[in-house]
Image (cartoon, rainbow, N blue to C red; front, side, top):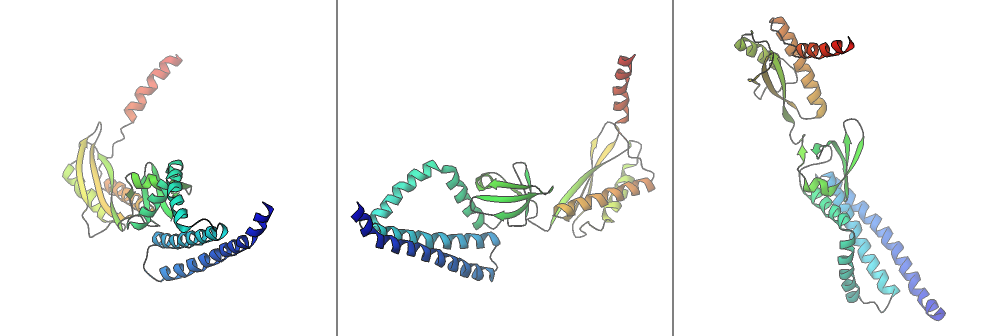
Length: 273
């Protein structure tokens, strides 16, 4: 056994040297691939996939050659056959890991959902910061980082909120029943159009949508920026302009909770007595 170990030392040294050389070549090739892909218009997620593929290919070849040098009786054919059987066993044992891995490759290849997009999926909403092979990093609006397995993003519907530069926003406004609805519609339309954040190239919709308990409700729809901050700023501006316009036109916005609050307060007073 000792003689076998001693006779194996030269092959072991060569195999270690080959592994070190593989590590150097992999780093050099990854750097070259990164420089080449950076000069193109390739998406960042696709650049990451190219770099990872180059690294995996070089390491696979280097390890196979190192194993054949370390174990001379191990031929490339038997090694590949063994890898085939081992891959099936490993696939069953690490099914979820490989599922996320393949899902990550497919997500990187498709054009939609790029880094920087705001998405919503399975109750998770935020900005895509990084797409890796097994997971995707999503930064929520409150600045928490959520690490999502790629299989969730691949198998479930994903809403890409920033797929276009603009999207439609809406808000509900109620007016009292004694209001002239045609006049209210004109006032609301003028208020929404006067907003700086409203897209002038797309229509502003004002619909009377419901007879509520104390008001006739209008649905206001307009187009503005697709980013989350654009949405909040646009809604803020439109709501303030609508409130000012209705006040100037002496149109009342009823408060529907006064009656309910009074009814809830009466039993509490009787219980105290």
